[in-house]
Length: 282
Image 1 (cartoon, one colour):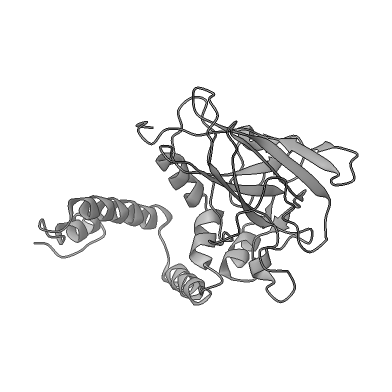
Image 2 (spheres, helix red, strand yellow):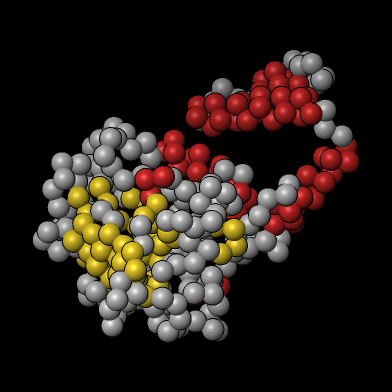
C-alpha cells in the first residue's frame, strides 16, 4: 500500500476499492477516477480553480428542487444527456431517432380524442400534427399511446407558470387507431431559452454560449412489444437548429411545417414514428 503522489494517484485511489464491492460500480468508479485525475493533471488545476469548481457544484445542488433540476440542466448543457441517450438507444435502420427527455414532462396528462386541440390559453398559431406509428416492417401499430407536450407561444411550459397557464396547457395523450394514425392540434412551438438564472446559465455566459433551444414538440410513444420512444419534432428553418443549447437536434427529426388556410389551424406537419421491438438487441 503506497501513499498518494502526483505520479501514482490513480493507482492509489483505485486500489482502495474492495474486490467484494459491486463489479459494475468498481468499473465505473475506476474509470471515473482515471479520467478525473487525468483531467486535473492535464490542465494542472490550481487551488483557486478547484475552489471555484466546488462552489459551482454547491450552487448547482442548491438550485435543485421539486420544480427544477439544475444538475440535469448541467448534464444537458455539457452534451452528457445526449451522449447517454445515444449510447442507450442505438436504433436499428429505419427506426425513429430518440433525443433528450427534457425536464418538463408531467405524468398523468389526460387522454384525449383524436383531433383535440391541446392549446388551452388561446395563444399562438395552431398546427395540425398528424401521422402514423409503425413498426420496422412498416405495419401500423394500433393502440399506441402518443404523449405530447410543448411550450406555449411565450416560450414557457405550464409548470413554469402555474399561476398563469391553465393546467395541462399544451399537453395531451392520444391513442392510435387501427391504422396506427394519430392527429391532434397544438401550437406551432417557438424557440425558448433554458433556465439561465443559475450556475449553468452563468457557465454558458462565461463560455460565450447562448441558452436557446430551437422550437420543438415533445413526443413519448409507447406500445406493447416495442421499445419506448422519447423524441422531438423540430420546426424546420429555426435559427437555433445548429446551436441547440442541449445538443438535442438530429437531422431526421427536423420536420416541415406547412402553412394551411383552415378555420381550425394555420399550420400542418406530417410525421411518422417507427418503433423498434423490445426484442431487438439495438
